[in-house]
Structure formats: structure tokens, C-alpha cells
Image (tube, rainbow, N blue to C red; front, side, top):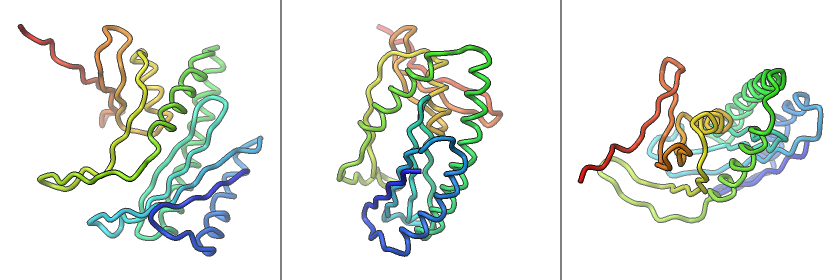
Length: 197
């Protein structure tokens, strides 16, 4: 496993690095190849102390990405949570793509992987201005390309990223839409209302 560890707004001490390497080494047995694992540890000035540290893992694969982000009150607890979550996502990834292989669905994964890679690169964080809102702050803005895709492709990308919603440009009609996961594990979609003259 090729592990890269970086930090943002916090110091990456030798103790944290050693702990992260030990925890992430457990992922190595899940892969039959030399996986490239990127771990970023950052600190945010949140109101809740138990959410101050964020551990974010991204693993590029042949057919997509595995990505997880978890929060904790210390870098150690955030690393523990993200490592456990990534193991779960790896199992889900293997199950999903072994089923697709059996069904001979080829090509969609590569297209999704390219679009996710473009979104990940475009959403790399820079120092942003904080916007004060009535109840909290707007602290992060993400930008990503939106080539037209189908609803099926949007839900697949959302699942691969591990998000609860995904904004996309709908190939059928060209409008900006949002798919989201419902509490009953089905999906919902938000579309703009028809404009009236």
C-alpha cells in the first residue's frame, strides 16, 4: 500500500503519523494490488469540540474511487472512524462491481471514475472567506464540472462517493437536478419547477 498523509490547519506529529500508518495498514490486506491511499487530516474551528478534527481518505481504483470523511475530537479518533468506514466501503465496492461484472455492465464505471476524478481535483480546497449566516457559517464551497449524465449515473456516482445527495446536469432535459437517498433507502430527485411567463 502506498500511503500519503497530509495535514491542513494542524500539525502532523510523528505520533499521529505512526498511528495513522498503523491503522491504515489494516486496509492493505483488503487489496490484491498496491493501492494508493491518500489520508488528509485537518482541523476546523467548529462550535462542537467533538467535530474539530477531520480525517479524509481517498483511494483511486480502476473503477472509481473510495472516499470517506469522518470527524472526531482528536486526530486519533477521526482516524479510527475513517479507517472503519473505508473498510466497509471497500466491501461494498467489491460486492457492487462483482455483481456488475456478472451482469456484463462495462464502461459506466470508467466514465464515473473519470467524472469523480475531475470533481475531486476541481474541489481541492483553497483558503475561503467565511460567510456569516443567521444560524452558523458558510465555510466551504465546492465546484465541479457538470457534463450531462443520466439519473442512473448520478445515483451511481453518489453511492461511490458515499454522499447522501448529488447535484448533476440531467441528460434528459438539461436542467440542474439533485438526487438524494431517502430514509427508506430508496432515492428521491429534486428538479426545478417549470417557469411561468
